[in-house]
Image 1: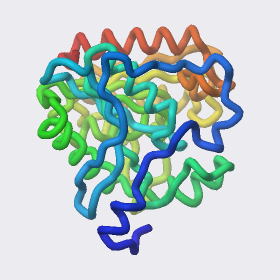
Image 2: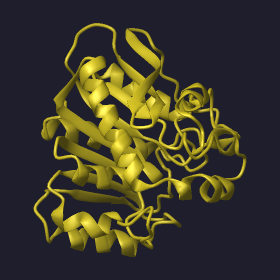
Image 3: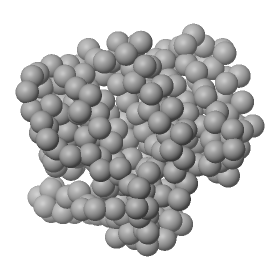
Image 4: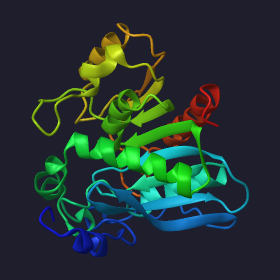
Length: 278
């Protein structure tokens, strides 16, 4: 999509409906949050090279809502991420999830996780992500009743890593909650840094929520991040749930663990309240 004209880019950019194909079959206990009392749906965010789609949910009444950026997993801004936005809106937040992969491809139509990673996710530059999130924050403030002085961020899997990085990038962020985001990795031109590389200069308090049985994020790397955080003064913390897999918050997948997911959500709400987001 990189060679599309600005007009084509805008026309081609829409959010997926339902769940990403690679995420099927969907569990029967999937959580569904209604839109009663909310304004919820797709919006367009102006960015440097056109517009990107995003899902926005907020209370139907009121203004100057605290803003929460909700950062997607590798499956994009599909139904689960949209539902998380509605859960935040029910709590009084303006929650917005910009589609971070739209220039590189539509992951919702791909059926294989490795194909999603190799064809799309691995080609997304961190610099593009940071710029798009800056644009999303600006839009939320100017066009969607958001209070820039109460800005939080949370993300899952791929978005968990982004949560750590954006909390360094934007000093306006009051607090972040990173759900099982990768902490250590090989640097390259597109992804030059990982959370462990920026831990010492982090000033924003980030709560990391990780699974002790996550096959993709060894506990040793979590301990490495904990040690790196000690060199700074952000007040960040990491919780590790024993015998818990990756994606334990994803209520539509077999990896879902209700007890840990509910505990993590409770901790998130308290963290945002403690650090001035709520």
